[in-house]
Image: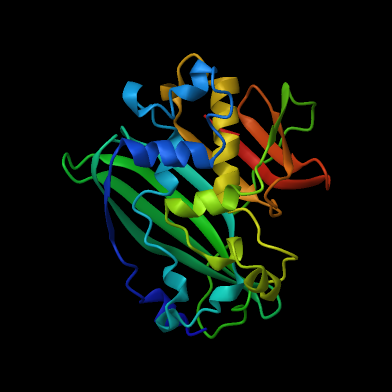
Length: 279
């Protein structure tokens, strides 16, 4: 990887026209609407009566696409993995109109030749019609094939302490075998999530679920558990992607009333989201 080429790469600004059906599609892609008589779930998937906006929807709005696949970045794009995510809601996600996403590189951290590099990104999502900032999204990508580059290195983020007592809630939710195929319709066409040969080249036995799909699945469970009476009180959510989820697996979510959470795949007994926090 060429440090200067990546740092100076112009990440495309995304101007996106949306309508209520886009929000419904997103809600369905993260598992909402499985119970056809559950009014709490239906508020997010019924365009005739809303729909309500689930906060994690902002992760797929104004997204610049898989820009790291551009050879000009000089990154080994087949070895890019999303390792953590944070969203901070600042305003109202519109049901329709035009949203604009502006993404920039915050920092690049060299972990070493055999460990890769961390790429810290920030996306500011705004409403073009009103100028209002809707959300600020931070994500960290691990460039597994690009450690030991020739250039300066920033400092990796520290991890906050996590509760050691038993969680207040433990909730299970099934993912669907075709869930990655549906989630791709939100605008994330990375072939890691659909192409078995591509997944094997990246080191996985088969296509994995998008980390942001897991993030959205857990977001709806957290909202229902901690903010059921008024999900609009949601402010922010963050988590680390510890391991991938394979579509069809069962996710077990442990939640503490103070906002901490983690999630694991029950069949393999592995943590897939760690150091989670919601407020």
